[in-house]
Length: 338
Image (cartoon, rainbow, N blue to C red):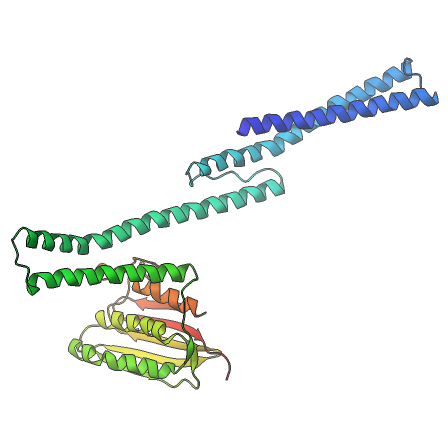
């Protein structure tokens, strides 16, 4: 494809130059003969013809040089595009030639990089989903086969684990659905003016028994001066996830704090703990799907979903952490003006 393009462009440009010079020479002869200023058969006419031919050869040479300078980089892009079409997203082209050709090469490389990243994300997603499905499916299959073979009786003790694993599968499927909707920007929110302080206090109260059993102090504070336009069910899901994570990784005698405050036009919710912290190499990726610590028992979707929900509200979420000293996760929600 590249060589065909190069040959076609070369032939077109050379033909255009030859025709242009030939037409100009013929026109010169016709006009000169008609007005009688130059005898086309004389010495001066012959010299003019040779001069025209000389310029023609020079024009062809310059055209060939210019065509090569443009056609070769374009040929690289065309050849690389063919490889991308066949599924090779690792191909890149050298940025050379004129400014417009270099700009084209940069755009092509950026496109190829995005396609490569999307393909890698797709493969990683399939691998992660397969991994997360394998364990509950194995439990379900193993228990049902044992019951059918008569190894286990079909009683509550042996059917309960099967039911529990189906719930795990159901939660995983629903989490993936929520995450995909959030990432696509199509997550439906049922917004209403809500008391965010009351919502946070209610969540804290819900976790008090769990916190007491874990020997962790859980407190909630904040006095927002006005209600916030939000989806209370979705925001509750975010805060519950953050508090549950904080309690899970805070040792006995530790403290988990939930705070709300108004900063400019944003309502800010912070969940902080003095637990084990997040490893520095994991921290930049905590809001990506299936990213989790080695000791985590979840699927690694909670924080990714939290980010999707907050983003859908027009807010932002970030995390700060230090190993052995705890983690602070903060998200913002547009609160409007008073």
